[in-house]
Amino acid sequence: MSKRIWIVAGEASGDARSAELMRAISAIDPEIEFVGAGGPKMRPLAGEPFDNWIAEAGVLGLWDVLKNYGYFRAKFDRMLAEIERLKPDAVLLVDYPGFNLRLAKALRKRQPKIRILFYVSPQVWAWNRGRIPKMARWLDLMLCIFPFEKPLYEKSGLRTEFVGHPIVEQMSRDRQPLERDPLLLGFFPGSREREVRRIFPPMVKAARLVAAARPDIRFEAAAASEAHAAQMREMAAGVPIEIRTGSAHELMQHAGVGIVCSGTATLEAACFGLPYALVYKTAWLTFEVGRRLIKVPHLGIINILAGRTVVREFIQDAATPGALADEALRLFNNPSARAQLATELGEVIATLHGEGASDRAARAVLDALPARDKLSPS
Image (cartoon, rainbow, N blue to C red; front, top):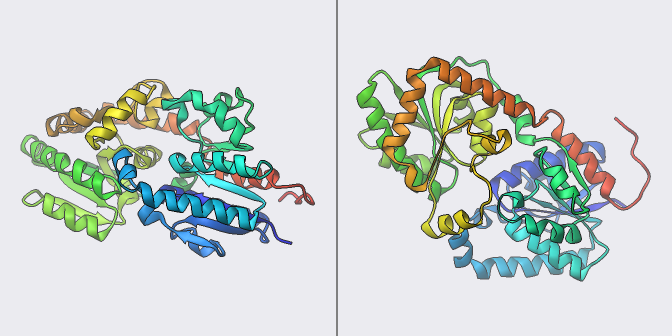
């Protein structure tokens, strides 16, 4: 009989990483069957039951989770029941730690012998390292994508593999022979509507200030969808910002300087060597809770990996139009600073061993399944 993996992803980034991993697993063992919950990229690769819930599950912060508690509680209970009914060979949890770690805990209590695997390790090292020993009791395998995570998890006794970062692998495939425009400022306000509403208006005001100081600089913004693009065009009325969809990676490779919303896009920008500044604004409650919990001195993963400030960060009240404009102008006016920043970004990215990341993760998952005939090496 074929093996069955119940897989859970709850955000767009997890949907992408899961789909990559599912394809890599299927390339090694085509008989593996996937069921569970995720998004549109996973849907064609999965059987039934599969819940395409990303649009509802991908909430932004604590306040959104609280408002939708009943929805998540119902999904949680249904997944537990379906996993108990189907008895998959393993449960593979992809990122989305708020939901997935609770699911792992409940599964371990109900089904002590089930294999529970976690891909894209939760950033508990940033906000609650004391949770790692608990995770060691709930999980059978942690697949981490940052090199410094492996020893942290292994200290607790949790079997851990550093497989490399799949985004670095993906960005190498998306690279185009584009020349940077030293007079183009790229804006990347995020992929969620709430991020766009909070972060794009300061970007627009910063563009006004930059244009006043340097009329030769042009502006372009990447929108995650046509709906976001329409919303952004309203926000930018009167400011000459070209707003396009589906152009983020192209813009990251073409712009001379970028202002990038904290998150996956900052790592993507670094992969392409874009000199950029990090910006982030969120709901007051989410920010205040996070500020008290986060134990690392930086928000951006590039700075965390480097252990110092490589990319300047403008967070919450510091994310003013004036501050963003000043940083953009600093980079535009100083070619050596841009070149140095691009070099440092490349050095950090090299530590992530992206090439072959999905294949290494796939083999680790297959090795963790219940014993069967060994697959011949490819």
